[in-house]
Amino acid sequence: MSNTDLKEAYFAGGCFWCMEWIFEAQDWVKEAISWYAWGSEEDATYDKVSTGNTNHREAVKVVYDPSKISYERLVELYWSQIDPTDPYWQFADKWYQYTTAIIYENHEEKAIAESSKKALQDSKRFDKDIATLIIPFTTFYSAEEYHQDYYKKSSFRYNLYKKWSGREYFIKKYNKPESTSLDFQDILKKKLTPLQYKVTQEAWTEKPFDNEYWDNHEDGIYVDVIDWTPLFSSKDKFDSGTGWPSFTKPIDDSMLDEQQDNTLFSTRTEIRSKNADSHLWHVFDDGPTDKWWLRYCINSAAMKFVPLSEMKEKGYEKYSGLF
Image (tube, rainbow, N blue to C red; front, side, top):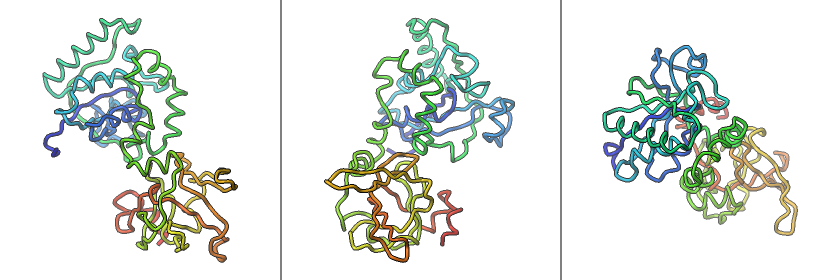
């Protein structure tokens, strides 16, 4: 499937990263990208849009394979994630930039959206009229990188917000189970390899001397495989003789959590990534004597390596000073 065979669909419905996950969980959706829709300023930024004075809406662009998943299905998924009866905002997200809208690019999409809206109104699922607008495509501006895939980059904060804001309760109350059954674990199973999932979510351990980074000596940083949070630097990597990547320290202690692990008839210290809450492995006190005796023994499958030559391009320029 080439990029020319893909299509795009646009939806506004409260904070953009609240909608990304449901679309990216679908097998035939390539990606969902956070955008600023409509609006009066071309250099749209979050600081400007959040004032409510630029007439932008927070929205997502869904890139999908129309031969495998229909526009109708995307509209159905969209309805399942919003309160379509609220004409002013969404849950805890107040003001104009959070109002809902299906943004069509052609007459076919408009007809599908209007028919779907009427069917939702006629279903009497809600005790209020459907207020979501159906509006034509005009201007769209990509949101900042830190907004993209926020549900993966900061899954704990995202899930906490979703529950606190009332969105999670509303979705479960008003939608059929099949509309909301996909959760973060379903997404991870689709986005990670089987080994990456078993290591990060089920605390598996990969084979020694038979993993991606145990013998990697290139300069760069190692980031969380789920949310790409920087974890370790190659400058702190050493050959421990164990067959797994080993480090004397993390880039930032605040990015890790330590938990007591009493499995395997012993007490060890498990290391987990704080943002994504994924299992990395353990820290031991048998490391280099000149480095506080620490050995962070980490599964390759829990990390992705970013070479020094690509760090600026991928947004890690501030860590170049490590080298």
